[in-house]
Image 1 (spheres, rainbow, N blue to C red):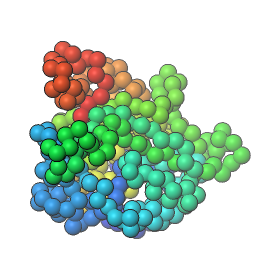
Image 2: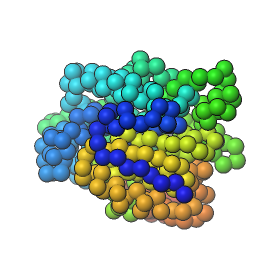
Image 3: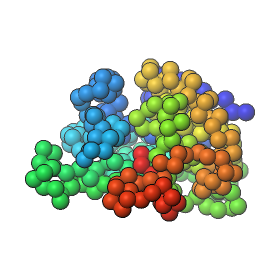
Length: 333
């Protein structure tokens, strides 16, 4: 049985303490702008007002969870993202085995800065895995002029989340040789020898998971287990989440059976992760990231609420009933 290791501290400093070539892969949902999870902004989030976070989370009468407003970042702040991730990639480089993959959740407005930084640090940009789901990011009418311009939105409504995939170059002549020596270089296939696709249909994080780990960026275990499992091609090794939050990535690794280590700076989230990781990891014993279809994965075990299948806006417009939800493949987040 794998045993997650949780570390409270600064990401850069704690990564520097890890042994060289000790990591096989990285999977994380970093603070996209590095601003929204700074102590000042987290304080405003927990206080329920002010700052970068959109609070209260409402739009056109629909309640939604807090979301950071990256459109308010200054050019200097956006450039600082690139600077930070170059430094982050430089610290990570010797700790990750040759051929090791790095999978980072992104944001369409900011991912170019992360990609540019890690490429400059020496990593290969391998792909982008699209998590397709129905979100509440974007789609806003002009602020304080909603009635004046009812047919105008400032930017598209987000229906996907990019997960950026990078690889540290292999050290051997071929991937096969790299797999033999370093156990890295490729991705683990799904059950039945099916390659991991670059588009995965998803849904909102179920309420039973949020009840365990109420973090604003919590991703569903079904998705995370698929992604984490894919990163260790031979099914063995160490996965790092350097921006651990409440520990959902480590919980996914625990459920799959992988060793993992997580780093978290925020004391409250670190404390939450102590209890959340084993509880999240114990959910859905049959779901181990081998299947894209959650019904097959769980052998009929329910891993999402029925309302996760309902697109609220479509229901309002078309007056759908719950019996119509079988044709909808994504949910709100």
